Amino acid sequence: MPHHINMEVLKSRIQRYLQDDAISLHSLDSFSNHVTYRVDSSFYGELLLRVAWAAVWSDGTRQYKEVSDFKMRSEVATMHYVKEHTTIPVPDVLFYDPDWDRKVGGEWMLMRYIDGINPVYLWRTLTDDQWEALCTSIADIWSQLMRLRFKFVGSIYEQQVESETGSIGSPEACMSGPFLSSRDWLIAIANEKLEPIRRTIPDPDDEQAHKWREASIDAWKKSPLLDSDSCDHEQIVLSHIDYSLHNILVDRDDPTRVVAVVDWEGARTVPMSATSNGMRERIVSQIPGWKFTIGDGGDVLRLLQARAEFSGCDPSMYNTGRPIRHKMSWIDVRCLIF
Image 1 (tube, rainbow, N blue to C red):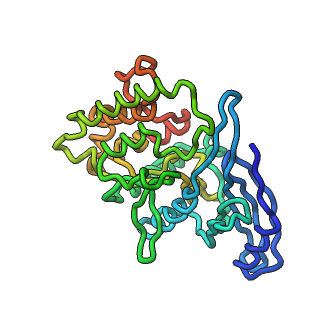
Image 2 (spheres, helix red, strand yellow):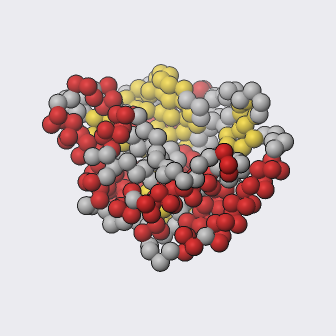
Image 3 (tube, helix red, strand yellow):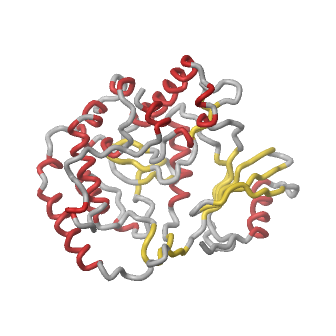
């Protein structure tokens, strides 16, 4: 995947932001759409740097490109919002640079380094009491997210006065929300307006896919399910789209204490039924509407969402009669059903 980050410009900007010329950068990990570095500063100590890039790649038959410039901007705003409105531990973002002049090669943010460990590495060593305490902490963090309420479906962005819900991080901002209803949101998904990835060359099968997509959209426009008198399915909450053990850090000395929830990339406000429905009993007692979400009513709405996500596919290729469950490892399932 071709990409280029101008390390000289990046280092210069970090030095200017930190007012520290004695910094050093150390490469950590490279992912499909960003790269991470450890930054050592004489003033701030250890920091974590993440740089995004616009990438173009091929799967062998089609060429794709990453086209969204708004994901990290929304991620930073979401982390600020969560820190302000909950007690969920999230990393402190010191600086965010959208790289408007493209001299770095991608937007980037600088965070305080958190000395924690992923509980996946400790799971088999935990006692039953530790396991229960950690599961309780993880479920309670999820409850805090589910208690936040929003008027629209979309992504969070920071305005001059306060955070607000805006369009989902997408290259077609005018078509990306914010959405007032589940119906409008599902239609946008079906029309592929919310995907940050696009094919660079039209697919020869697009004409047939267009017909399937139009049929699906017509069905949603007429669906009485989305006109239900019940407001449960219209409760709009903040969803961490990858809330699982590998995005949680715990205290090295106390593995029952969560010290950070990381990777807020792609977090957005969605109908409650579109969130992970793995957690059960403890959440039901804390969150109004959660019983509906994990029950038959939520299953129906998840099926509608699945059909939207695969609207360009032959409907006979997938079974719309089976409940949709979020994919999780056995470790996550053991934890999140608590």
